Amino acid sequence: MGGGVFKERFVEHSLSSFLAFLKDALLSEEVSLRRGFAQSLDPRIKILSFSFLIVAVLFSKSIPVLFCLYSLSIALACVSGIGLFFFLKRTWVFIPLFSLFIALPVLSGNFSPGEKLFALNLGHAAITVTREGVYVFVLFILRIAAMVSFAVLLNITTRHFSLLKALRVFKVPQAFVMVMGICYRYIYLFIGIIENALLSVKSRVGMVRNYKTGQRVAGWNIASLWIRSCRLSEEVYAAMLSRGYCGEPVLEESFRVKLKDWIWLLFTGGVLACGIKFSL
Amino acid sequence: MRDKVFSLKEVYFSYLGRFPALCGIDAEILSGQKVAVVGANGSGKSTFLSLLDGLIFADKGEVRFLGRELNGRAFSDDNFLRDFRRKVGFVFQNPEVQLFCPTIKEDILFGPLQLGLDKAKTESCLERVSEMLGIGGLFERSPHQLSIGEKRKAALASVLVMDPEVLILDEPTAGLDPSTSRNIIDLLLDESSAGKTVVISTHDLHVVEEVAEEVYVLGQDRRVASCGKMRDILSDAALLAANNLTHIHSHRHGALSHTHSHLHCEQKGCRDGGLNKKG
Image 1 (tube, each protein chain N blue to C red):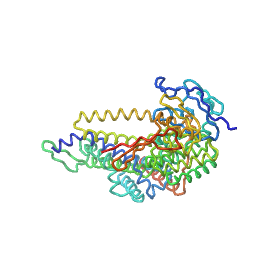
Image 2: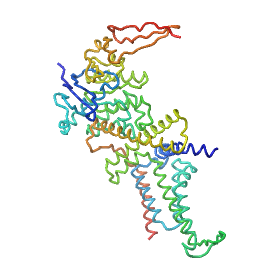
Image 3: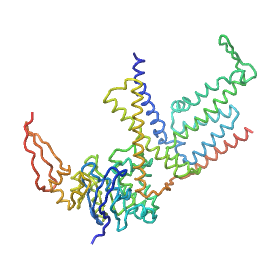
Image 4: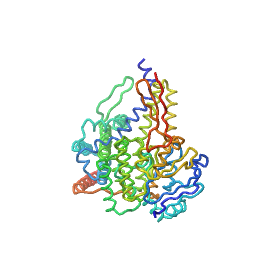
């Protein structure tokens, strides 16, 4: 019975969860508005310095060094007012866990020949775990965890539009930055439209009864959203023209680099230099 | 003698060449005038305003701004385009359309940045506008975090910051609470007394009564059904009724109820709906 109800409400659940995830991942700026070390950095310096740290992780071939870099990411999270549990959940749930399963075979002697540590007896077959296998496995997981941690830190401690605007440091065209900004701004509006459309279906016919109806409702939603977005894009373009837009956007530059930013950039640059030097 | 800011002669416009929106419109808007374009839903008010703002061009007939015809050729002249956009500000009916940047401050500064307006002047305008509308605290917020009234104010600010000579507003008070409506009406009156030309579209006759001195009534046939002084138009009950613009109120007096139209000015031919026994 419970399973049946779940099946019947599968589409509704999936859509609601997806929308909630989108809102949480893209639109929650709660952490970026807190007072903390990472939040206080200039977004341009932050992108550069976190890129340095990610590249340093990429070059590092030593587990203790990677461990230090991963610890640095956790320390950064702590001084940026991010709860440890929240940060670990954000960084470990998807990519590192997924990578952990992918990397499991590397433990075995078939892929990493070397000194035998122990053997796992799986009934008809035995898997030998080697010291070299464990080393490669830990190195791989730590590297991914550290890189994901720095990327997540950069993402959650910076307002998304500041992040987009800061991309201009890397000579990303203004038009691209503006289009991305507009996309970001309207995602919320469209999420609201989808949620309201679902509610209106629910208010008239109750919950969606089966897969087929659910698929049909999702199809209507997609079609209606497409038409609305086309209309909205025309109107937004008219609103831009009305305020003097001529095809080449001019955007405001409001960033200011402080002494703290330069010191931080120097530090991360040093980490990168050491990472490269010791990897060669 | 006041300059002719806009003049429209026998203007026709249709969407996709098949759906007529305006069918032979004649109008004249003078400098410093307060004009209201009224009409029922679908009478072509928004299309009329889009033509004035040069966002669409007439299929037939001509629309002129300070004597120059508004068409594709005029807007391909960069100097004219910048001058026109500097002088004419358009507030859209739907603020979601007008607020397309991730933060309110970016939205407000979009126009001045595109037009290359003087930075110091823009800063002082920004300060004045934010104080006038009380939106200083919203600058770093995203449009989706605002209420409809705040969005409407922000949209208005994004136009006022350019200090245009002509303000065009499409249903500026639609869907707003009475207090926000009041703020916006007061602001329009202030702008008008500062010498700006104000053109609004609405079907709310309360707003017309307060804001307009000249009124154009668009009929269901998408032509100008009548135009004239605000008092003359609002006192013509037959004209308003014929164009779905009369407010009908229903009252209960114990077991009896009656309907009557709402009086804006001293209306001619205003008839009481009589008493009906209910229940």
